[in-house]
Length: 268
Length: 272
Image (tube, rainbow over all chains, first blue to last red; front, side, top):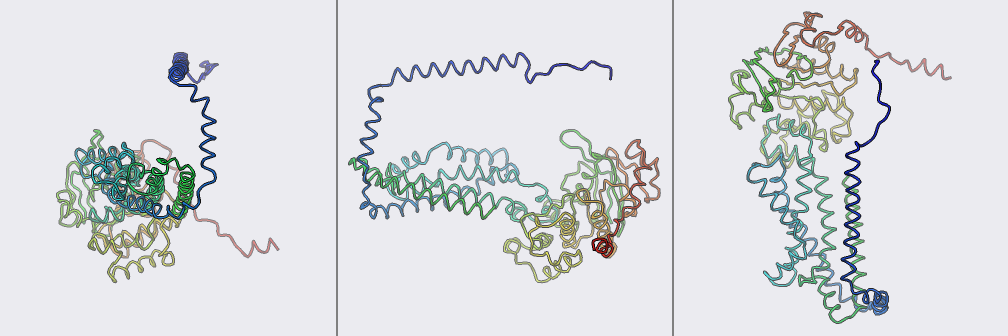
């Protein structure tokens, strides 16, 4: 123990420090450069005008046209149906996809797993609004287009989170069930399903909650529900109606979030 | 009863876990498998029911070579081999009763297990076993609500539910305190004696192995370096298995581990 001990300690080596400093410098330079481009293309007259415009629209929104509310009940019901049926459909398809995508349950890592992952990525990378736009063009406007759009978008979300939950299961529990001489379906239902069930419900309810929000705007592209009314009101500049619709969406979202929080609390 | 012939296992990484293990275990015999971590104890018992595929060799259970079986036959034979795990490996979110009944999965068709419609006879036996391991009143609790010792008892009941011809026991006490460890070992040895069940028990704790096992097999780097009764496990033998260490101190400490009984009346008098 006669060796001399170092007297100083630094978190990073000098070279690392220099790289880090250069990195921050580049980031700041980029920000300044972007800001210049942005302000060059901005028509400042419109920006200075913004508070007046906002006040103007605000004043047109007041008072909200409450008499419009009864007419919104049917579209609201449609919106809820789009969200719920879309979620159910998406989840039903997501379950087998998730089992094919999870490394520990997929029957083939070379073929089926990439296919499942591709389905998940495709579904996730396209927004519900875009799905709805495509579907309205294919199967015509209406609720069905909305339901399928929501379902298609949900497959990826639910599939991804569910397959991660499957991969995180405790292998010892599965091993123990396998050791009893159980068949593959029994290993699945006894070893894996009980472990992922809480995650499954929590993911599904969470997605339903998101889908309520998304289905409220799908009508903008003709896929039924509240968005349809919103589009109509915007077209005739009926801001007092738009305001009622916005308030209704807000109330629905708050309610659905409360329900989903309650359900998740009950499960975990 | 169980015969291992030239059993070897080399993992894909190139690590040899077992090399050329030959071992014979008679009906009703309790064999303690000891050895340092990484000696291949876990691999050895998992090669028997092929949770790990052996690279070469034969595994004879009665007159069946388990190493040669196809999937369906292997599942059939696994029913004859009960397994008990280090960290219990119960399905945590299922009830105690469901866990015990899962020992019947190899015998019942899928729809029955899915709907939890087990045969009346299975249910009777499950209750009987829960009574035997002292957990009858916990039958409907979830497995994760139990203590370590209780969970291991459920593990034992699940293994027995298979009506096995052989028990494989992987570090049954590694996650338990010393007193519970002894209770679990006692229960295991009693149950094996009652049923004439042979068992291979991987065990870390040498004194525990010596006090409960009839035969000790010492494994080092995948080869059997000791095989004999616990009384033959001399200092030289332990050094052969584990490498040099002061073995006498380690053994002495375990001799009087019985907990001091607290006399409640005395305590009450002092308090008064």
